[in-house]
Length: 403
Image (cartoon, rainbow, N blue to C red; front, side):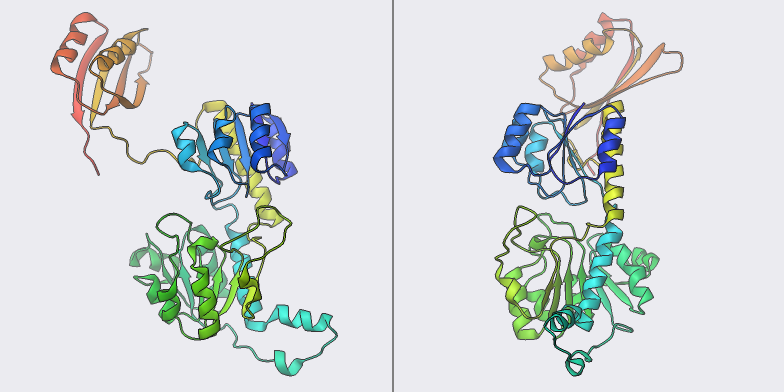
């Protein structure tokens, strides 16, 4: 199996992929047209990326079967294009959760104690204890979480260690689940905004969350609140954030931005960099040795299972619900051509197969096939199948209920 790794990737992961019999091409600086050309030349079965954008022309350039995002989010991959071409997209959820939570708390502490400003002043040869002795402290302050997925959940014990009560909103959070996590449930993001002293955002970027945090949210926050975003830049209306920093005195820690350079080393021209109340880092939330080793190991696991079984762990682009309306259950003798005859009969009525499985009984004499269809086959077809082969023992058509 040919693997193209088009991003930085741990040596342990490269060694692990070679150990399971993969041919590795490690080209971490490939981007844009150069990546498309490399795919066309190398013809990889699997493409591994971190932050590199994967576009439809790249997916069309070679026989890629699987794209692995060596990280959690996958918004840099054209998932819709991959789905149209039957290409699996997989990720490594939860492997960087602790690293991102650690950075989020580093930003909270840095804002409160003005760590970066302290360092800058010292490097300039200035001693200003009078100025930098001012801090609110975190004990007893309320941490508000917008999103309590794997990273958001890692924030909870860290907040508890600092004596901070936690309130939270998430799309799937219920009062019962909140109680189990040790946080107080809030019904809307704005409820979190109104009550929290520190707000940390931990939601995935998708059409529902793009621009989730905007003018109304910032307007609900108390003046001087700390605001942290280590999720994705597009979750936040950045112009509204900049305005709130100027008019409401918000102190802000960002690891992600609306406009980020495509390469690891570049100029950063986003105007928000000039805001005095901003502490920014360089989208490094997942960049600890521990996190990257865990992600590398998970990537190897994904590729190994795909190579050995054809199945893909953590796949993100399989249909949650197909257009199937009926299921044909075929109890049959385990003989060559039985299912082929069934599929030919279905095809004759222009019915499409959506999903199919065949389960063989002990002894390999009989089996049951379950075939999900986008329409019900006629009684005539079923009767003809039963009449033309004695290898089919029974046929049943079930209507699939839509949930």
